[in-house]
Length: 185
Ligand code: GRF
Image (cartoon, rainbow, N blue to C red; front, side, top):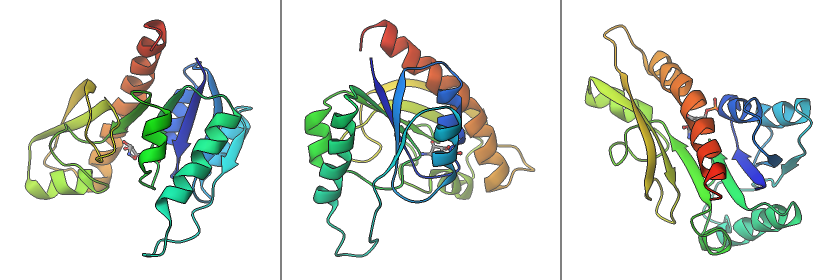
């Protein structure tokens, strides 16, 4: 099994995967970010597929093909999303059917989208959590592989809540990926 990780942010979820002795062969980022340094420090090649535009003119399908080309070059057979900030199009789902795993910082199907923690916080829920699932073309859809609840505390801010959720993701996500590998995913 050869895993490619897609990340955009601080890369703490990526770090948990790098620390978990998973067969990660490449990390792909869409912008300059700390995830690149984490990959390099772990001796894993980091590839930047730069997202050149955030406007209407962004060619999402062409961008997706560029990402798939890099994944193919590294002979990746399982993709792990770790906070990747660009929604990818159909070509990646065609190339990797049931082979894209994502972690989401809420209990799906509640609070889909990029601002899931803020949305849960604003809704005043007392319990939220995280979900590891197979990704589909529709964002934050797909079969759920694992979930874990995280209580919302009265003193929480969005930041402290997200940090507690991420602490769970950093344990749950590598464990699920190890299980998938054992099952021969
Ligand atoms: C995680 O909460 C993940 O679920 C979400 O983005 C966050 C990434 O965190 N999609 P980090 O940048 O790895 O710390």
